[in-house]
Length: 299
Image (tube, rainbow, N blue to C red; front, side, top):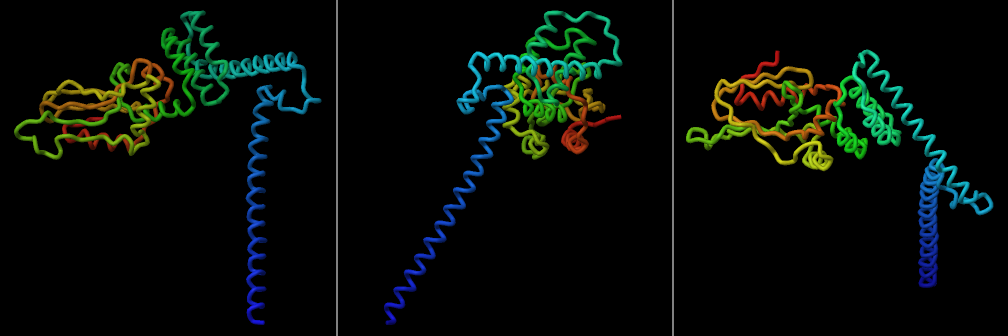
């Protein structure tokens, strides 16, 4: 009797386990179906927005392929028209306070429209509007090549450029833009073993790591090869600006060199689209690193 009872208990446990397993499997399928349904719905909405959902509909609801082609072309042109009109409205706001004395090149403007009419992201439209405003007020500010590079940039790339600009120093003419990566003194008998002979600027601590530098270089915005300034003599002065703030350096010792990543000419062109945005924490950090070998005046 005891043995039979024991067997019954085991069977009941197994049966319960099977039941539990069935419930678990069923819940996973339900979750998967729900997820698939969400993905399908999102995909269908996207396809409908761009009028490429014709073959996805039930056969009785499908338009003729010729009609679907016409519909897609019409919606595409409407979308482009809306995009460029939005950019024109934003442009007017940026150049309303400036006199436009010189005539903008018609070929440049035609190329500009062709490259910008597919831009629907509001942030990117703002930047395209700044390009046009800059060109209207000062023809020749943006080259065809700069437009092509900018056309291929994503919103992520644009944000990365803005991050680089927020950490960069500019020469007085604003054409030379640099990301300072360090400062060092040429090795000699008196300083060869000094731990302070070289100071590194950790850009990744402020959101710009090496992978970001690679991405900027791939877009031809900076030179990935680190550069060095000529050796700076004791007492020699350098003048830079950091997002509107003056940065005047006077060398404390001889044979000092700045290390930096330099913006390309294209990068410098597009950097003018980015508004000055001072990162006070970084500016303090940068001055602290430079102070090992420079007297600093930022008045």
